Length: 71
Image (tube, rainbow, N blue to C red; front, side, top):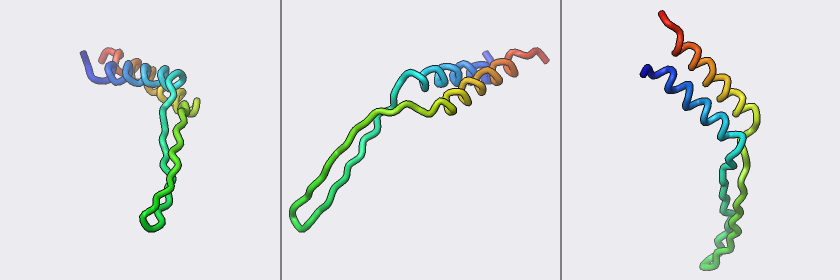
């Protein structure tokens, strides 16, 4: 199998997953004063912006079309 159709399928899968699967994000905010350390850790999950998913899907379709063309 050629590489371009494989890349196209991979981009399509990533594009669909970007609409469904949230990406976990963790932040640690802390202050250290002498021997004492005060910190707060926050964790949230966010999905990618819809524009990123659309770009991934469009790139996948273009790569599949270009990869399946016969020369």
